[in-house]
Image (cartoon, rainbow, N blue to C red; front, side):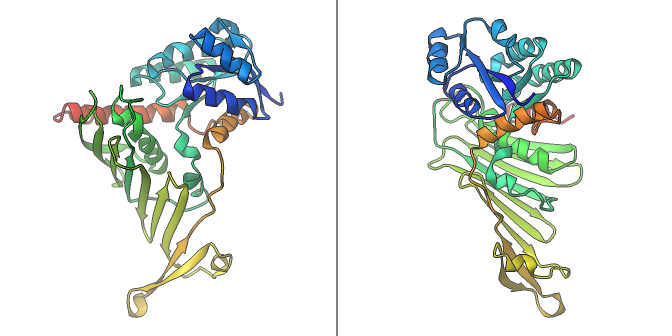
Length: 335
């Protein structure tokens, strides 16, 4: 099988983007779309040269995999139908409305031998992809994800709206169980948290400090990683990465000659003097969502794990729920 038959469930704003991108991916044969709004479904299908299905089960019988791009409260019901109809599933983040539903999705996919990919798109941001091949072992992480106010998305807390992106990135970087979580947040313009700050300590003593806000005067999506002999700066908005590190004795200067590493001078005195290097890995110009969908299709074709598995998406949601619990019930203890 050189391509997979693919469907899109939900063709609102983001669902249309899924449709457009899927239609242009070589490893995908876009078989059709479905939406409860039949007029919208027909319009999108006509626009991208595919078929609009009036019945979800009919679409599921014609495809190998689907993108589920519907409100989070409908993730479980749509995913269950897809998996029971022998389909692999791409689910936009978060994986489900709550961790109990997420556990059901992960369990069902495992029992039926189906692949799940959760749409944590920042995993496909060029700034994060530039870390591939780097020795990353953070001791402290600080992130700021700030957004100007947009009424769309305010039906959920900023934790599930914005911070969950950084939660997923952090969990992918630190391979250790969570030890403690301290969180605070406030409602400013909506009925749920609009700004929040969280401090997480892991069993390996790594510490993370995250701030998310959707009432900022300007957008910011930055993360800073601190580890032994190195500091890494990620800008998810400008899509660039900088790595500041101390030159090791075994460095022969070959990398510096390539031009993407430069010396910033020395720190220390005497025999403790060390040279500081700045490395700016190449950040490719890519469409992150297109890469995300293509990687999902290729994981199916090659029968390999997806980039962000259902279990990983579930863990991010579980941590987000603990954070929400800490904010809304300050005396809640982590178990």
